[in-house]
Length: 290
Ligand code: ADP
Image (tube, rainbow, N blue to C red):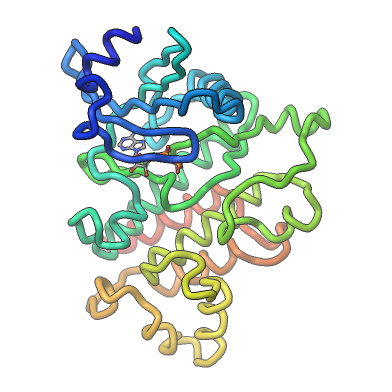
């Protein structure tokens, strides 16, 4: 209830605030039963937020997977809109890659995070009934729990594939610059492969540590250029790599990881792998490590 949420976040105090996003602020809270939660509170009077909140509740109450951030509850009371999630102690993948969260992700951990996220997305695409396209896959929507298990969050923009096939799809392209599938942008035809493109950009972020667009340079283009410059050892790419992993002696599966990322960001959607193919490839990389 509103009163419990108010209490458990210490009256929405600033000291309990952990972030702010598209539709309001996010607080850390402690429920009466001892569970730590994240409470997302909508900015008063944001209509757009209201719609995204409902989408998020509808979808999250139907999907359950260990690589998707779970919705613990919600509250529409006294003019408030709040969503209550399981708390993700290690914040977003972006924060870790930027070195802001104090944890350094080694190479193998990065593969595991990619694999976890891919499993969550593959569940949405292939096992959820009806299938769901996330539409806003990015490193700030991949959260890490206390064990550094990756969970995909933020379903506010998600679409049911069944709505799309019925033609109930707005012509307005949605998503985040830098992650947006160019083919979807041009044709406005939304498919699962748009999530695959965005996921490929996230994989490139894991390699370079950088955000998709930095200093006017686009990560996909940068990596392509670095790869073209050199032979199949991709030595030129070393310069572009995240310093945290750059000098690691054994980057298990690295060439395959890079190849997979580049397949995901292929211009043409039909050249990109499916999410379950990505899951299999990443699993193989980890298995081959013995
Ligand atoms: P946006 O709308 O920009 O995607 P959100 O409103 O979803 O952002 O979240 C804002 C910030 O709050 C995130 O960047 C993250 O740091 C934090 N956050 C969101 N959800 C959780 C959660 N379940 N556990 C811990 N922190 C969270």
